[in-house]
Length: 317
Image (tube, rainbow, N blue to C red):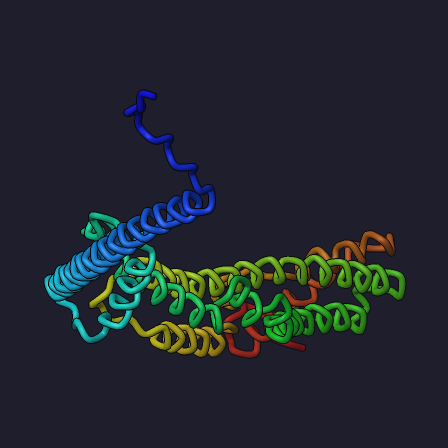
């Protein structure tokens, strides 16, 4: 027999061992990946901290730069920095909070006009406060309140009575002398009442004009105050109470002089026409010309006076 020299058959594969080997391979791969991920996360954390530090530093620098620039702007205007530093700081803090996290250029959010914005706001606030103070005593319509339409009633009535009484007495004397009959007296009295109504309307027109002028003077003072408030600039001084003082002083003077001003506007104007009253009364009675009779009586009396003084050519018998 001849013996064969062939290779032995391969050993049978153990599935369990292969599975175990594969598990070890996967575990090793997972371990490597985990290590790589941990390393990556560490790098990211380091980078994030670096970015945050850089952002915070740039943000602080931008804030401080804006604060320095704004402060210089305020002082260059001749203003006291301490008066506006809180507003400036508040505005800058608000801007700081609005900068997006990790923005590469935080300084771009702090404009060069930040101080101007703060000062304009402060100025507007001051102006608004002044206007509110002025409105406490000089709001629209205040002059009408100080001098209502009835402010001159007593004065007008006094002036009217001063001229009415002599006119009324003249009619009565004409009646008592017989220049006017009962009918003529009644007519003259009626006409006197009509002239009184017309005279009162005339006085009210004059009084209204005087009051309107007084109100205008008060409004002019108030308008000057409001103009000062509206154009107020930081660094200036303005006290609304000074406007109130001017209004109060002027109002007191006007109140004292109201009667004189109305009388001055009336001048020598007569509200009653006595001759016309007696003439109308005489016409209504129809028996005589009472005006002529009244004038004749005056003329006769004057002649008698002249004779007594020796000025006439005839004596008195």
